[in-house]
Length: 253
Ligand SMILES: C[S@@+](CC[C@H](N)C(=O)[O-])C[C@H]1O[C@@H](n2cnc3c(N)ncnc32)[C@H](O)[C@@H]1O
Image (tube, rainbow, N blue to C red):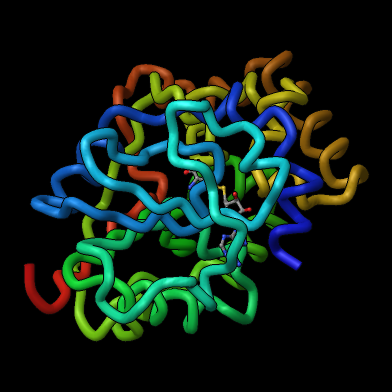
């Protein structure tokens, strides 16, 4: 079960996964005039708008327990069975959650569309792009395969939503949200167990795979071969690691 997964891997999430200002800004623009917003897979409260009425849906107790007291309390429910009436909120949002919904991904997205009068806003990954970044391409093909199995293609989401736009969100090297994509400019994070464990990509791998990747990256940093191949990335401010903003405009405001 997907919430049990976060009960196992969610410990320490809030310390490493703080909201990225550019992602926050893009979500706020997409939510436009919405006064009430349901956040599905709300986790520790990252990216929840502060000036709107928020309903947080979060099945994992370990994640809900890390929500700051100023955030809305989380309702323990699942994406594919939202405890809300049809068109009862202005907008629905979900950030880096739907790849954990297993067989309920389509029904969960359709639930978001059902309950929102206006925009449905989803932040997700395009697995075709993330698979090309050095970490997945050269060291961690297991996560590339997992991503292809769990992240619906953006075009599929557009289809499920009955129409939506797709926009890339290039990820800043300085992002405070240390998602796996943020490792693009920071190979040293592979050597940091706390950083690794705050990403579901690493946390879902067997210990033997993690050890192999850590040993390989440590070796390639030590002998300079990582920097010879990818050192130019350290000079870039932003990079497209596959992060995508999907916005379905919905019925009416
Ligand atoms: C990577 S975290 C993202 C949390 C938060 N949205 C953020 O951006 O920091 C994924 C979240 O999705 C939640 N989740 C997993 N399965 C779910 C489901 N079926 N329905 C709703 N949320 C789910 C997990 O418990 C976890 O809190």
